[in-house]
Length: 255
Image 1: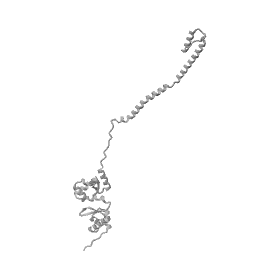
Image 2 (image 1 turned 90 degrees about the vertical axis):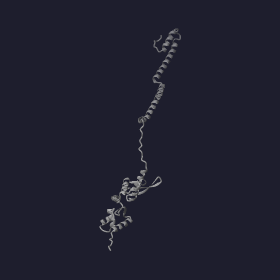
Image 3 (image 1 turned 180 degrees about the vertical axis):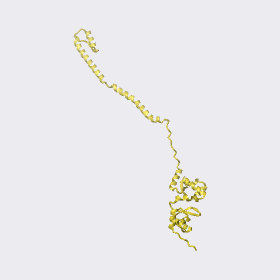
Image 4 (image 1 turned 120 degrees about the horizontal axis):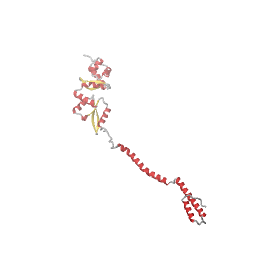
C-alpha cells in the first residue's frame, strides 16, 4: 500500500502568495513535490482559515486559489469562462455597473454565474430595493456613486438670452440721471440769477449815494438861492437858474 506524502502547509501558502492564482497542480510544480489531492486539501484548509481565497471559475474541474491583493490577476483566467459568461463579463467590465432589471434574461443568469467578476448589491429605488451588479475591481462605494449619477438628471446648460440692446439698458440709468441733473440745473441757475439781481451792486449803490448827495446839494443851494433872491423882483431869473441847477447843468456865478 502506497503511502501518502504530506506537504508543508507554509510552503503551499507561500507558493500561492508568489504565483497565485493557482490550481493545485500549479502549486505542486512550484514546491517541487507532493500529491495534487493532498495539496488541494491543504489549500481548502487555508481557505477555511481565511488565508487563501478560491474562485468559482475552474480549469479542468479545479478552482483557482489566490490571496488578497491578487484580484487584478484574476483577469488572466477570464479565458476559462464559457462564451456566454464571457460576454456578460465583458459587458459589466465595460459598464462598471449594471441594473439587473434592465438586463436580458440570459445576461441576468450569466451575471449570477460569474461570481468572481460580478458582485451584487442592492439599492432602494422609489422605495423598492433593486439588484445592481458591479465589476469586481470597482469598490462598492464607487458603485453606489455611479448609481446615484444614473438617477440624477443631467444639469442642462443655462444660456442667458442677450437683451435687445444691452448698451441701452446699461446707459439708460446714467442718461436719466444726466437728464434729471440738466433739468434741475437751469432752475437753480434762475434762482441764483434772481437772488443775484436782488443784491445791490456796489456801483449802483455808489451812484445812488451820489444822486442823494447831489439832491441834497441842490436842495441846499435852492434854499440858499431862496434866501439870496428873497428880496429880488427878478423871479424869472431865479426860476430858470433853479431849474438848470436841478438838471445838473453848469453856469456862472450870479452877482
